[in-house]
Image (cartoon, rainbow, N blue to C red; front, side, top):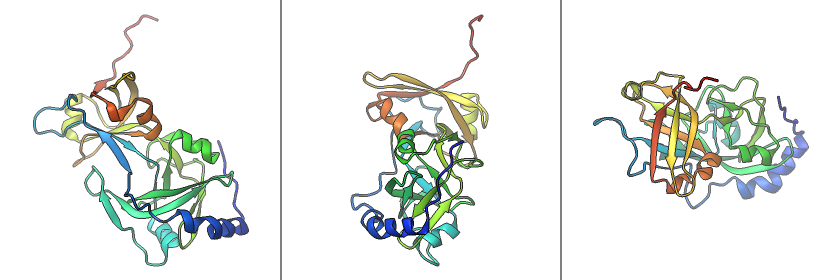
Length: 247
């Protein structure tokens, strides 16, 4: 398991002074947290069910209220700026810088709300290479034994002992979606994507179920780019079937 080096106070103060003020401010051009497609010829559930939406989830951070106040000042709360596809969730105006063990930094990483019980950083594989972190693939919220990092905000610094992951590709489903596709919570299903020159089947999407949930697939940036998702002409969920070979 990878570990992260501890930044000493002088390192942090120098980085904050020389870099943070230039990079942590929210980008003026908006907040591209999610991008995705509901292809015109998507395989849809029956009438009155949610359409199949496939979204790319860019790198982001979830924070506890305690860490929000350390990073953005005592009494600070997250500022909702853009609603996400799932009701009750949003991209906040706040961003942080993520620092890895090589002292390399990714600035302007969006914070998503609402606050959680544990802080967590979700990155793509290539982000991990850049930061020098061997990212374990985990379901969001499963952070036990994962690497840590340093988060820097305009008012303070938080050193996470764990919580940095590459999110397992997954699909959110409500009860009607589970019935339609014949799957259960925590099972798996495949996603078939037809796109120019990149028609692909992504296997073993984790099924995450709950009441009031809209049907939505989450892929990370690397996965979405690799399958040319933005130009997809068809997306469909395919139930995983046992191998029929005799080997």
